[in-house]
Length: 635
Image (cartoon, rainbow, N blue to C red):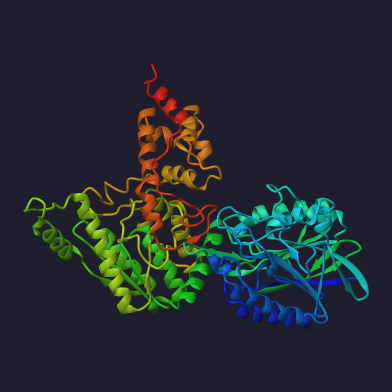
């Protein structure tokens, strides 16, 4: 007997249980039309996942439960497995509020089916509390429930398949929720427990955000689980965006099905709603998909899809239909501008060049050339006159000291003058024009700049969204090439922009010809990436150790020979390392805290994914010993 099993890869709107339930009911109707026997819907599909402390609102929880009953009632003639919040009003969580579970409900013919729990649902066993996840703050788990049930009850008693009857035959479905499948760092192996209890197929309901290359790791995991258990695996994920206030996460879906031999049989396209259907033979474990596999993507294509999808959904959510973007003639603003033209159309994008006396004719002409190629609206608003008036006003304004009774004057330093330019562009010109043009304005900072605070408070650290705030400089360049070659299929970003030296052009010392950015991106991109994206937080201790061992380039992944080219001796290497480490741990933290939301794509994005306190830079004792030895100061 073949069983039709399907994944409804739907777009979830966090905090809107009514809209999400309507999506689920539409998916159920479509599944019924396709004669589906078992339909999977994503984890927490009724409420959404990243809701902050909305999870503490009792009225919201009750509403989600009520909408869940509509899905249960709609399960006539098929089995529907869906994710929702489940509450036990007779018990409390560790915070004293009503106990809540991240739960999967298995409904058939209008009734709920039960697994091993003393509840009519399956609860999540492994609660993630890393990166953006905060599950233990809100949810109870099967693992926490176990001690309450007495010493005779084991986890094997609680984690059991759900038995459903399809055309007179009983089938055992091993239902699990997202993290329960990622067994590496948890005490309980949920897939193994389900298999021991006779599960004939694993049904993984997920609400799993996109991360660059995450699908590769996910694929390896599912191949291993289906092979080891000798049973098929079905993975149902959602699409859409969700956020935690500081980070906007995209959900790529990529729902998929594996047969008992670990072969992926069929999968859904990324960032699209889909009903993925397969025929399952419970006797042989074979799956037969209706279509083949999705084509593999290049790195640039993968990043482009996530950023475009996330930005367009984020703007829709805010009701923003127009964007104003400051364009300097450099790569960061060029990529940002091209992206928003691609998303909104050229007629809804205003590009603004704001030159001072330090901006070259080359970069000014490149900004205009790009605007013309994109077909966008374009304006030139020189800031030199306003900057000079501001500096004059600051220099000439007396400040009265009421303690001494005397006046004094402040002096605008060259560094302060640079910041005045940046703030005039952001706070006066871009914010003002965005208000007049309608919509928002962009933050063009990349991740390297965010890491060391190479940006100005209330100047370029401003805007609605930091579109490229989770991209290193080399990724920005690659994305620019992709936009030209694959998206627009013509040169909308002039070739010269890829070739000129990156420079802020805020002083005579900063030119595209000679004095560019202080960061040497082919090296510093990888050094700074080690600061933030390493799972165990690479520190100066490890970096200096690798340098002294001659393995730094291997660990960082940068070009071989680059370290020796940049640093003739240990002293110059240490000076550079400490310069950026102090900035990373210092004022840059305050700047990142106040930065706009970031579209997250990496395995560690700034914001609430990478949680920071404002502290002094830390150097371990071992680092200080290594440094003293390297500099010959330990004699």
